[in-house]
Image (cartoon, rainbow over all chains, first blue to last red; front, side, top):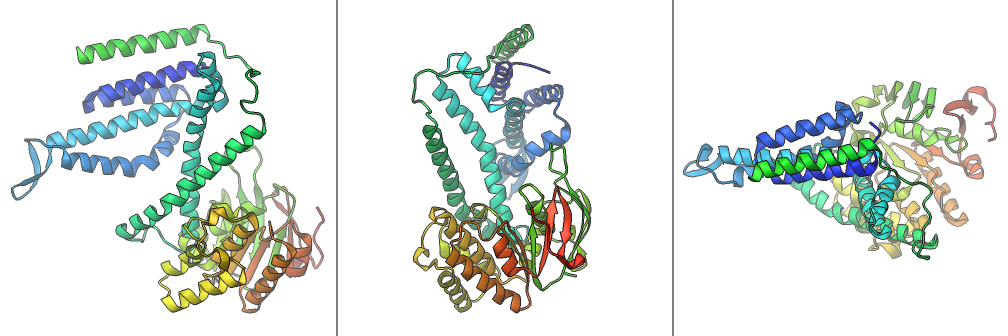
Length: 241
Length: 229
């Protein structure tokens, strides 16, 4: 479906707001299903969605376990002597956190359906200062770069003969901890180089900018924006009311 | 044969034309082979396929008779040392010395051998002054030397070097040539990917020319030189 990037941004904001407000697995599951339907409408298939979510699987599992153990509850499922380990309330809290993360991640996929240039243009036409719009877009662009960077490092490590699947967890965590600094620093160097390259090409040298393209909201965009805001408002009022 | 490629093809997602098509190639465990060809001819893609970094879309690749898909990246990496054309992607440690020691430490090398080898490569590639420096702060040529040293330190059976002379001055290029000749004399094979025709001429016994993802000429098979590009 051809929509203005701003309509999609509003949809992402609405879905994410609902994900943050809803606090039960059932509601979040419904929201996730709606988000998936939206992704299907925007031509995402199941494989692509799974590909995007795959890197978060471990984090989600980890969060689920931690939340399940550390959220107190009366209906104990698993106990170690007098100490209750997992309760039904804990499992529900874990499921809530994981589903919330899934909804926000899935909604954020809508950002990939338009270019960073359109994103900046959309914000600028909403009177957001260009510098801020550019900063937000660059930050979003750096997220996949950061992921690629990590992927490259993991490939390089394995090519030096380290079988990550066979490294014990304790050792693996030490290795990852030591790798964090170089990976983060490498991205900081990239950001610095980007800033230099931009300034060398007259970024902010003059107060006026020329935009080659103009985004125009169509009737369908107005309908989508109004509908998204209205439905979100009603759902929030019903939930908290 | 050490490496054997049968009808190998590969296409990058969202690209209309394949990066490599119908590649049939056999590489012996010893000797120096070079792959030459213009930009975008599929040279680097081919080396990544040989290591299993990229999965072949068509055909099969065998490393000593076993399909490369049956090897983990680490298993392939222990046997084939790989230096990519962008050394930045291969450097991930906090210091130059750690970078060279990384593979050895993880293979459980004893401390005396480790120190000896790290010092040797630091001296040979003239990186001793940067022992404690952060690798990404080095110049392009120094990063290139470090990436090569870090791979050579593991002493793999075979080496694939993608544009190893990038950023190297004439003196360092000669040092690299001398070292690679020594490695080859020890019976280890080397595959060079390079645009540096003079370097390739001095080094390679066999030259394979690629264009548009296909082999245009192979000096081994035709008994002739390679196509100029």
